[in-house]
Image 1 (spheres, rainbow, N blue to C red):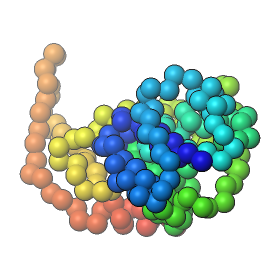
Image 2 (cartoon, rainbow, N blue to C red):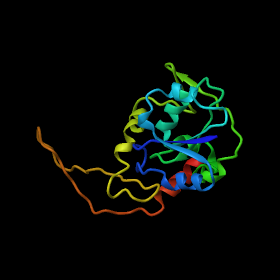
Image 3 (tube, rainbow, N blue to C red):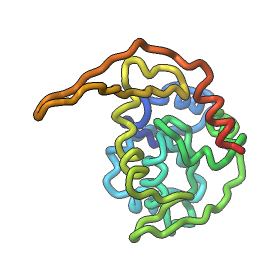
Length: 195
């Protein structure tokens, strides 16, 4: 049995999952690390797996989507994901159990479960398909994950200008206010959205 670590270097911080690899190797497991961008044909990759091989994704929602489409139709394929993306929205569907995905050692021997898929223009989608502004945010969010001041988990930046005078043609209006950090704002918002 071999454990394939498929890592997306463009997800989240992009850091290689070195601790995960070391943990697997220390427990005597055969490990092969692959930068996901080196796989040009997921279907061929999964077709070549043995029945007892394991695939561990290290990435976010985009990584999950690409690999889910690659394993579709292969009975020998199963996947799990170590959340290393920006949003990790797919794992949020598991509620309080989502935290279990961050504890890689507890994933090794867990039972596999089948998931229903949505067909969206010939592509498999897990749990949700977005369009419009939602899709635009999902496709561009990784650009904002490395902002220098956006360092706290679950933190947000709100930006805006209050324009109080007319702005002439071809001009740019810039307004600036003093920074105020609204402590626990995101936690309160998440709690409110659960209701």
